[in-house]
Length: 416
Ligand SMILES: [Zn+2]
Image (cartoon, rainbow, N blue to C red; front, side, top):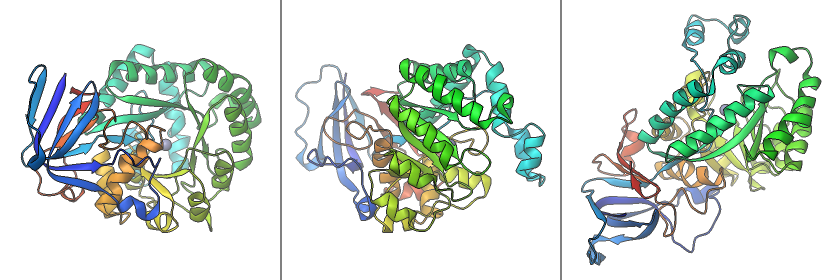
């Protein structure tokens, strides 16, 4: 199948074939190219060519060609959501109400809430139920313009349940057109059976779970929740040492509620990304900027929990590479809407639309090591793009917030 999209008001996120930068840093995030009055050709699942309508060569071969007239509309590269917990069982709106009534996290946890609530539900769900619920969410994010997604485990917290989660995540990649990457997050919380034995659980992670999961090729990345009352920087070192030994690359939850020293541990292990960073310690922005590690902000989590937003300007001024992602999960961000994440990045984090677009697509792709194929409109890239509803400019997308701007989506060269 070949697709030609013509009369595009603005073809956004265009990258020159010679531009092979893995990611954009600091000021580079404001480099965002839009071709006005454009066409885009897709063939064999790849972006074949594009240009302005004034220089359009016309159609010489109509066989198997689908022509889309995108008059008044923009075409963007599909979003690359590099941090989600999309596989889960049940929901947690009861805790949500408890929190609205003023209960603290501690009180909610005492009532059986928090991550362990999801652990209990996930352990008792069978794989078929889990696939059904997760596929529904996967189609939701596709409908809102996401083409590639990272999915973490971490609600199983025992070997069988973690394997179940990662296999279900693999099914999402098989049964939908999403490109997926999987991350083992066994160190998300202490499971109830190890409540008073953190070292025992870390031993289980290091000696059994990591070797088995890496051995079966069920994940490419390793994650840990480095936070007060969860896993500290010493635990993180032990876990990452084992993960790296088995070929898993770090992507770390760090600095959500407190500065822990986890950032420097993650950087020492060449983390692909350090995620959350709602709080930045002295010199941490500069330390991240000196490496290839991507800082990933999760604005939907900040919105939902009412916690600070990641200081994007401090990170960009230091020259860091910044991505934005949803953190789609049942407790702290029950939304996988990247359009809303882009709006919040502008409204709350004072990113310019161009910077937010790059953070949500090109740098998001880099935070999943998909930068050679995803996140931009570049000849040879996988044909993942969405056509918006009619809009006057690209900045209209984050400005006119809270609706779904996506009218049609193309993934792997197929119209969805
Ligand atoms: Zn998360």
